Image (cartoon, one colour):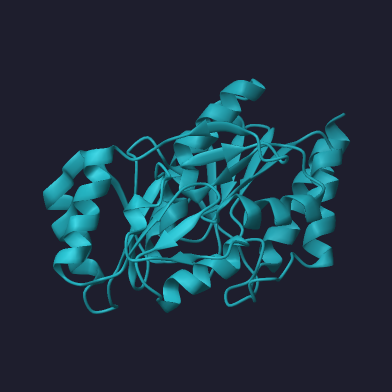
Length: 272
């Protein structure tokens, strides 16, 4: 494995254990290992499905100054909120998604980097808002709320979510990037993924692909696990991440991440 100069970290399930509360922060041991890695000269970036406010909160806690990859790569911000990159959904695609949800009387959400507007009150939108640090808005005419969406969520049921993905894939093909969650099918621009955002940041930092490590545990991490020179996942990962990763960490919860980052920091310090 090449010398690692850039590490991309997922938040939920990677820096925070599965089931952590929305206001949770990485524990002291993990936070210390991240800071030690930064001090050793390695770039550390967060790559999350959260919107900007929820991602920035973790970044500030860790003392990071690097850009934040948010919303599955649909938006990349500086810590002060300045947008570096943003990938909007094609308007026709966005409206097709809404028409599809409406046909089945399912709620949908129309959102950008800082606003999340759902067509009616639903628990998945409430939960996502908690994790993202935003207050979801609920209005029947969500698509007419005045924002240009970076994504649209179709909120169905556990029983129907897989079928929703198949039908939307058949309807829209390569015009959309779809991700599956238990009751939500999230749609973004084909240009939006953690992997593509990570590639942009690495190029800007002058870091080669083989010098990048990505750590994540879920389907939305697959693109960066595959793109990075070394992809790492955790024992509780889903089968998508397991298939994409080069390495499976040991230990319970996120303890393996702490040990890996601590080891990388030590190697980097000794090589100076």
